[in-house]
Length: 427
Length: 178
Picture 1 (cartoon, rainbow over the protein chains, first blue to last red):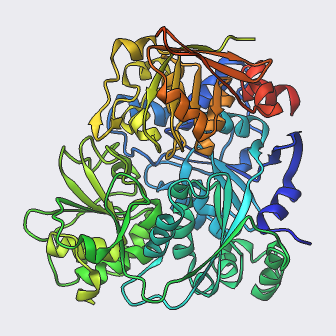
Picture 2 (tube, helix red, strand yellow; picture 1 turned 135 degrees about the vertical axis):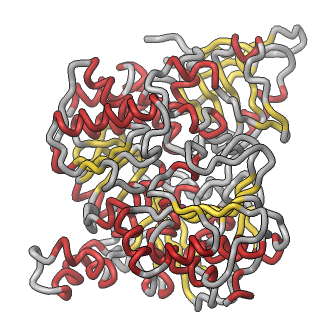
């Protein structure tokens, strides 16, 4: 008793305690993409350690720059491809099947409640939405994960955020997490796991839970985590139906991971989202957040709808709902990037792609590119982007550019009016 | 054990992120040395671009900064960009988790000091040289300015981080232990 979900996961995976502050955990899944993995692969090869701990537990994708934009990115892709082939890594996703890692891997059912997951990518915390401990790591941690199936962590403490109240129309998970980051600040959750609970979280679908867990790292958190429940079980059902008699059995089994009623938290924050306005960032830090009304009228040059934060089908539906029958404001560029091929197909079937195209948007294949200024939508100096992504750092989407983070609804409203606009006027 | 310390450069801002330390457009490189000339390329201090190619920066072996150093992306390229520029110690009020872990995983030192100590270091006059004593867990900042007394600060290093620095990083340690 007295354990949080994170502590239960740590206990079930503990391999070693190399110092009183550190724990080494056995890993269930090691995820890899072509930006941070090739140097790990090359180092392992160079040191004569080119092996993988378990090819079935390694999931790999080319997603940051795809299709390759130049010889360097082509080489990164080739290193991944050759490595996956050499080690029999079957869950490797290349052109035609690839998508943004934190959207693609969940829809493949790779993450389950109680799992430990690492990836050489800070937004790995997204997978905590499934009741897993999922943490972004650097290339050396990734390398050891690939080679040995373990990772070391300074034992994080858990803070609980209880989200209650009623989300208003036109206000979504992105607005909730931006408001939370504003309150916590960019390092308010460093070395902590954030457990997101309360009626608002319980009512959220997996897509919304992934959005809030995705940005936990913007407050410094090791991982965001939600308690796995019926929503989780229904999402995962196609992948787990062989393991359980029915959904009820899965829900009951998942409950074993739930934090104990007397679990101890380093901090508990109560948050009532009733009356919360759409949120938008204004500076170069993701905790610089204002109600959208305070930013209304700020001109934008580009709209970007996509990423591991908000490139899922629910996000595209939100944006398309506003864009239907409307057009981009004069002089404004619109880019939409469905996060995975499955989402792209769904968006086609539902007529969303037609709505985006009729509105004047450029529709891109699934990729991370523009979010971090690597490809496909880089800003010029002094340009401004209304973006559904997760970081507004100086230079993030292009040197000298300014990024305003917001929800898909708010991005669509900016697309229509050409300036930052409260989306609720279009509902 | 490797020696840590040398001439220090001061970056007077909190929340310096890894995009500023090494912009994402250089993440297509597959060698660490290719990052060398791009260290801190997008850093803004007081809203102005930082002079990343200055002689002081070229000579620096130690960086002193404020809170939440290395936040944002997990890219170890940020640590490598310091490493290939011969920076072997970063001293800050606090670090982002992944950056700090990447430092020790590469066998180089991330030293956390209380805000009062960081303030003392920033208040020092003259050119500063830092010496780190891993036996005593202290670091001393010495100035070339005659009127400026040295400042010595004690720091904590947990036993795993100490082992990583001694063994040259996490891969060597993990290969031996797991």
